[in-house]
Amino acid sequence: MLLSTRTFYCWLCAAALFLLAAQARAGIVDVSIQGFGFNGQHLTIALGDTVRWRQFDATTHTVTEGTDLVLNGNEAFHHSFPSASTNPAPFSVTFDAAFLAANPRTGNRYDYFCVPHSSFMHGSVTVDTGPGTPFCFCANPLCPGINADAGAGCANAAVVFNGARMLGTGTASIATDDLVLTIDRLPANGSALLFRSTSADGANPAVFQDGFLCLQTPYVRTRLIPANAAGVAQFGPGLVAPTQPTFRPILAGQTWHFQVWYPEAPGLGNCGTGSNVSNGYSVAFAP
Image (cartoon, rainbow, N blue to C red; front, side, top):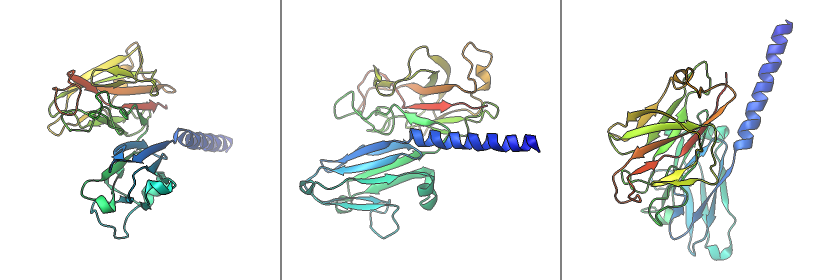
């Protein structure tokens, strides 16, 4: 009976620590409405993050969830902004578990639009509910006005104005070893090289080819795999086991950061250096 009680309290402590960690990593992501567009158009955020829209245009805009481009009362969120000349307050939505449960959408993607300008003012928020945290987004362009993507790596020519995006599914368990890292928006039938590091700096990324590198040395390169015809590549499950006999095994209690490098042909949307990187994905591994 004593063992069961201890086990219960250990489970309770672990759950509390998990909730505290989830709360600690939650952040605020700003989207400015300016120039008849949502700047930060396609976001990828972690569960629990808040998206905050601010109005800077001298005309009326809305932030209206949906894909039908019609305001019909079925929206997960809707807000109308008056002209910026009135200094309107920002509008915020917190994408936590309760919000997702109340407003389920395929792939946890929340598309939205501006009602008065629905033909061209669109945006989206994708919520990653996997075991890690996406980071290292290309919010600022390397090539002005071309390759920024606030929800992925820097934009490439394969999907114009969108970059390669890494999301995670499965768990962070070493024993289960079911973590899957999925990278989409890659060049069709191209190559993807996953690399990892225990050190990363998302606030001060280094310029690397057509993108930003947030992982820091020493890196560990894993295998090179092909993307499919839709520009999607998947690493895992079984990411952990092959690392165990190496000099840099993935162990419980460690946080590993991942990014993918890929070659790309110069074209509209990129800087023309010949290769690019995805956003990063951080995973704190457990037993």
